[in-house]
Image 1: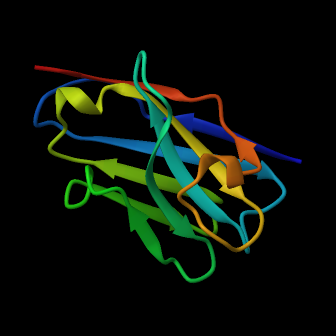
Image 2: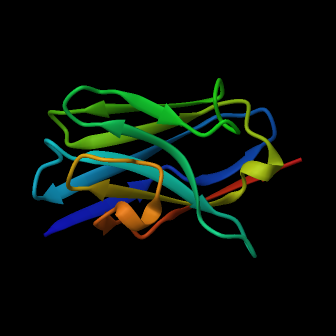
Length: 124
């Protein structure tokens, strides 16, 4: 089993920045892919960004490219999502998730473990 805990959410003004953290315990992150997803009220959960644990290859949704950066710290078993130039439409609950095996990191149904989520609210 693996446990994931997100932190770093909060209230920020438009144009501001936040850094989310996803800390893993139990099984290690090695050989897994880790993704960030978000769900706004009344909307489906959507892909935000992902990173492969060994190679560090990153992926990002078009809506956040150039504003959000995903990174990892192998020693701390933690993945980060640095969010800058935040917009009100970025308001959502942000979830991190782990995919155990290689493959696409864009689909939430392909992930095996999920955190409880952290709220990000961007005021205009």
